[in-house]
Length: 199
Image (cartoon, rainbow, N blue to C red; front, side, top):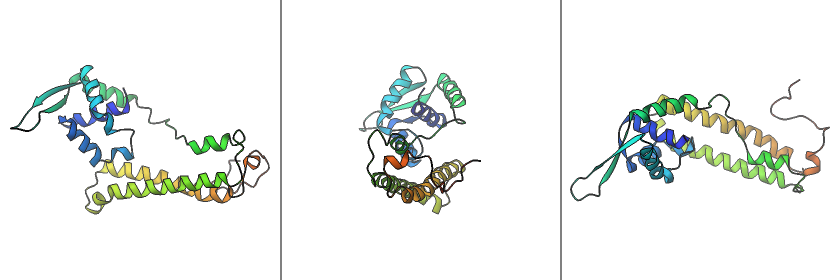
């Protein structure tokens, strides 16, 4: 079961919903900023879950409006959600960055002088944009004191991770200003990073 499956089952565990309603809830919760959920795959996911017997579909229609397909969690779906959430590997999940791969294989691409600093600057810009996006997305709920405790925990998690990365990026861009792949291969260097090397 994918994380998208679990998100959909989790939302349906709260109440039956039609596809557009699910999409709105995911957007209102800014799920794209803290999970791997894409609303573009929502209807495919619903059909897949229905085929597996994890949700049922009931078609309703009011007046001249188009029919709505309302999805409800089955008992099997509830059990699958519980099992899936219980099996999620939350304690050993790691973060991986494409920038680290470039640094690791800088020799293979003969990274020219100044290129690493340029890449770090681009990453810095991206992290700053993500930070602003998160603050803006949850800003209204924070201002109106409507943030749930769960949303607050997720918000603080994302903000803390991004700020920690920015701390490293600010140092790394200075360290990489005149660096090429030969500099990255040396073993005698000044360890002046934001976090001390372990002794």
